[in-house]
View 1 (cartoon, rainbow, N blue to C red):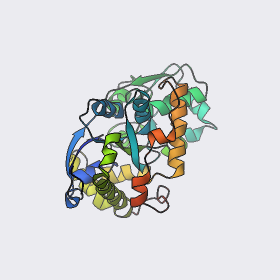
View 2: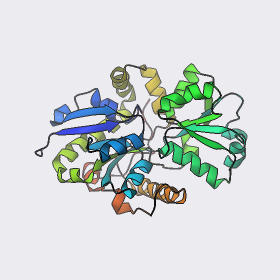
View 3: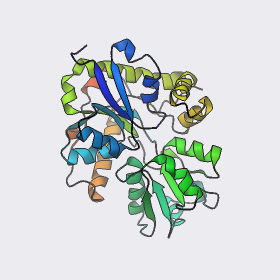
View 4: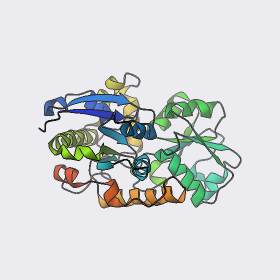
Length: 313
């Protein structure tokens, strides 16, 4: 173990991230790592904390990372975690994507209305804006909310006609509201990098510490894949807000978990980078080497990725 044996970790409320598994178990402690955890409302908020020097490592979607790098923040994505983590929900008056021949026709339902997303620069915000741009839909507004948890209420109150967020949003809507899943995650942006493990580049000097953390992260990803009920039980106890079946339902909507950084993950991230540039979120193209440092996870997970292997039930 390196001289530093502690990590200041920022994470989101996204329950399929390994953060809640590591918080609620002894996996990190067994590797000699003392973690200090802090919950943030969105990826852009984690970037702000990293810029302020209060975090070493974050669980975050890649678009905010790219924006941070463009603004001069020395960040590196050192591992993956999940792909295709954005869904769209809406009320009963909206028809699902399957009722139409194209995404364009589906989006035209929202003419003169608004789609809600987490804060500007979040992965969900960028995906919705790119869908509207790609399909030349210019009369649909994007309304950003500081917490994804505000989206179901905004939908129920009629502030927005649809909402984009993580799979948990669909489970919440189905359980507690009158909204339904309109667009599943695999129909929005193939292999989109739902989240990765990101560090300040100075942390790359702490190689042993990061290798120990990534070993724990890999074990947690494998627990989700091979024993999801046990993983869901830990997450439910750790959050104290949902039950085991809620977590299981969330796992099942987009069961694409792995810690590796395969070429498909990197290529999809670079597509996001180009989209961010075209939307005006960044001032220049940001290259692969400026975003990724894959050598550490390759030593932990040297084989083929498991993103498309699903989970056991």
